[in-house]
Length: 410
Image (cartoon, rainbow, N blue to C red; front, side, top):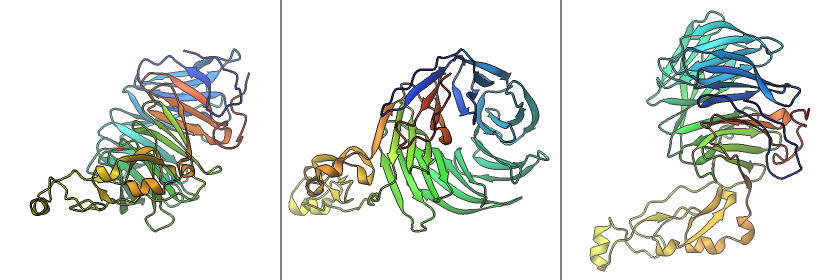
């Protein structure tokens, strides 16, 4: 139920500061309390807990509140001490936390969804609580009156959400692999565009309003960077995880992207370089290198009296090739391929050794990660997952600069 603070040697990997244990079920969300040695957790065991570090160096819950339904999502607004907790039954509950983090008072319940709440954000300027759920919708409600302002439905479960507070644009990822950009108004909304690029359900989103970049992680193990501000449809593919990408966070100061996957992988991507877009895959009825027919090209197979071949694609040039003409494998980090992928023989010869230099670092979190959040100002990260354990990490050894000293050592 508590953990010791470990010393932090200088290293080139994340340093585990603490483990917080004691939950009886999956920890759905964990957030670091700004400027405090504390963590707020929401769990499927129906509890909201505020953990503060004691003089002994151990974490103990100063608040332990039991909800009526399993907790599925959470957001916390530190300046106003307001916390919003989404539940499996579709309701969102608002609480106010005392200045000393020892008491939590119930404020109101929002009937936001008919099914599990998947993501929540709170906008203080407009007094809106915006959320997505497994009832396939995004809803926005007034926190002053508690009334529903608007809803918009999708064709699949809405799984994750990002919101631009200045422009009132919402980004919603869903289980079909699509991202929808919406403009929210007081009682209505309009669909601006949809983004399609993933082959699996969208599991995480991160919006950087300064550079107008959207990052999406998916169950297809990949991350895509969408250059919204460039208005040219530019996308960058990042492949380095071996399981679904559960959480992402872009550090604008150092131009780095931190991502976590379900198998415990933690990746730090260098985005401060000129990366290349992965090509669109070309279609052809025959190999674009040796011109041998693919197996569905019956006419050419008959004319040449040859057996049809299986179609593959070179990840570097996008050409449709046969297995014989793409027998080589290579990493190509500048295009986002951190592990070896299929390339045609001519592209393999064009890739130099220096082109294979990794542009990301990969680390092992050593537990199933279902959620991650960062306190970027202190270089701290918290991860949690189905193993019921919450881990607090010092990320300053790997994020490129000493943003802060992190949690106090006492």
